[in-house]
Amino acid sequence: MQKVLITGAAGFLGSHLCDRFINEGFHVIGMDNLLTGSLDNIDHLFPNEHFEFYHNDVSKFVHVPGNLDYILHFASPASPIDYLKMPIQTLKVGSLGTHNLLGLAKAKKARMLIASTSEVYGDPLVHPQNEDYWGNVNPIGPRGVYDEAKRFQEAITMAYHNYHGLETRIVRIFNTYGPRMRVNDGRALPAFFSQAIRGEGLTVFGDGQQTRSFCYVDDLIEGIFRLLFSDYHLPVNIGNPVEITIQQLAEEILELVDNPKAKIIYKDLPVDDPKIRQPDISRAKSILDWEPKVSRSEGLKKSFEYFKAVVKPS
Image (cartoon, rainbow, N blue to C red; front, side, top):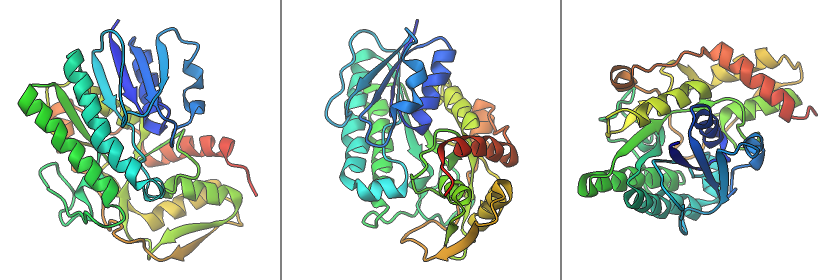
């Protein structure tokens, strides 16, 4: 049985990855310091003899006994509300944490996949964004701690690939949603669902015309799985290329939740908030034979069922 280490295992994406690899017949080692993750996301896995959990901060050290075939590095605060509160931890997990895990991968002769992000493109001047675009990032702005942590993560991963011949993969993840998102993580979709269910104002920043492209979590996990087992080592965008405005997303969620108390309210746009965001997924299509399958209407309905269960109405 092959072994995979998944960092950030108790988080939104990490927990879904744990499920996928267990279902595929792997022995899964989950690792998380629970800074933003929750054991609730992986409670169902603890009775499984092929799952084990390490409560550990990868920025400090990483030790896994025995053989290891794959490492997926998904540990990091991932929403603006988190990395603005925890800037140093965000920088450390992207730099020191990645360095520690690359060292482990080298020692174990394991293949390592890192979770990068569309944030490496910053507030893009190219639209849609393809992997050859270098980005437009403010390194000292409030979002810089996350953007630059991920850009460094890509750089050191490529250095280990080129210098040590390490088997590496880089996924650039665009906006993803679905069950197990944290209710209070500050991102648009969980905020809108929570506010609509409670009958509060849905907070739209600016005029709501900034765009995002939302990918349902099952589609994203499939893309990551295919990338890990591909022969391609350069970055690959994984996301849904269907672009919508934040205003449109708020309206769709209002219609779905159908709470007459909930209305859209407007607030000032945060500093360096990207105005456009849409992945060019040509590379994923050609190399991985991957594209999203779940429509936004279907994905939002599935997400609504989850948020109804975890958000208490006012």
